[in-house]
Length: 283
Ligand code: PRT
Ligand code: ZN
Image (spheres, rainbow, N blue to C red):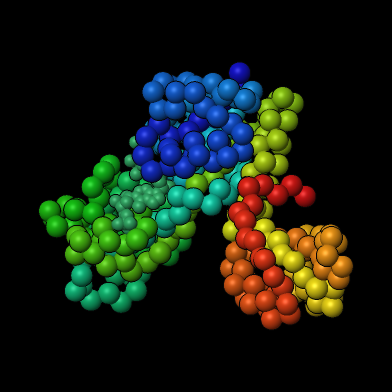
């Protein structure tokens, strides 16, 4: 059976399961077991700690995995990053105690930096010619300066509130990360087919994200202008109504443009405008 490794618990677990579900891969007994088959797709999920996912995929125990790009980079695993999934966004940053006189990356020369990401940090320090000592800590890195085991930290930042509540200030954003779909190199023909199907479905899911389906009635005189306002995938669908001189017009718009378009359409005489969510777009 072809396997996909996902985080067993933690920040990426739920969104990984939801993403798979949204592309028609429903997992049985999510979280409760190490392995769980999909009811509707020829794949089984392998639930792991995120730290283990890159190597498990590189070694071929799972053909695919969903994990933070930060873990892929830190482990240096030989895997292909095949898609960025649009969740789990964060960054790896250097942070120092509030009030320290920071004058640029050279501030870190001779300092001790606590982190769970020594490889990414080492590369940054080497690239910038900074000689600093790395203290590897797993968990609660943000308390290291307060308890005197480091001068600074290098850790994951998302909203920044953890840094603030620990009296730290983010001074260098080093690595931007999000959740990614990874694949082992040298996929078999069957694994390649499964990956292509997963990518096809993810693309249709991505295309439909933040899109709205618009449906309205329009007088014939406004049709030309309405088609100009609504770009649509090819062109809007126009269907005559039973009342002479009136048409029903259907189109898809970006959610961010919705109210501007609605205002323009109302101004040219559109009536009975319906707005609906789009579940999938398949080009
Ligand atoms: O048990 P397991 O090893 O699987 O999980 P874990 O505890 O190692 O990882 P987990 O579940 O915390 O995070 C999994 C992945 O989520 C990370 O590898 C990142 O790719 C991604 N991610 C996104 C985050 C965050 N946002 C995040 N904010 N991972 C951790 N954090 C932590 C961070 O370490 C810090 O303590 O949240 C705190 C900062 O958050 P803000 O919002 O206060 O800045
Ligand atoms: Zn972890």
